[in-house]
Length: 209
Ligand SMILES: Nc1[nH]c(=O)nc2c1ncn2[C@H]1C[C@H](O)[C@@H](COP(=O)(O)OP(=O)(O)OP(=O)(O)O)O1
Image 1 (cartoon, rainbow, N blue to C red):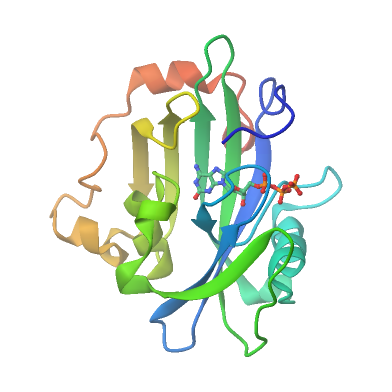
Image 2 (cartoon, rainbow, N blue to C red; image 1 turned 30 degrees about the vertical axis):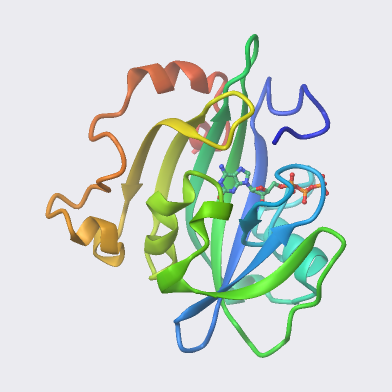
């Protein structure tokens, strides 16, 4: 689960992106199974680490094309939130901050890359058993047009969230939250856990804004 460089993300968060391409009927999403490197075997949208000289949106466009062959303009993507994953390690933790984007499929079929094997999945039956542990708590909302900000603390070397806090800015878009009139995701604690704050360290995208 860890990237090759053990010190990456320790002093300041690794900034990265994910793009979710949604079918024109709104019922399916294009995802890819990671074939190599960090998080091999995990199914996710297309994305990766931001280069120093680019914006998050430019990174999203570049990574989408590198991993799926699909070309899109920045204006075709909608920014739909940010999640932060803190990975707990015995002596140091490291952090990844991930900007989320949504786009509508424009007819260009994806091509398998050396990094990702793309497939369409129905939004009402996403393959959560093979996805990141945080995804069930926010991805349905984002795929239905919502906006999310979330923090997740991961246990050492395991794809398992041990603490989290999440805010759906458009709670009506998330079916899990519709079930709870409060508008809060039932999967996460209502109060921001102070213990999670202490794991976050030196801040990054969130603290810059
Ligand atoms: N907790 C998490 N939940 C989630 O949904 N996606 C996560 C996640 N933690 C990381 N990711 C995603 C964000 C990003 O799209 C991807 C990590 O990017 P990679 O390490 O694959 O970057 P690159 O494609 O730049 O890799 P290299 O070219 O191998 O350096 O994993």
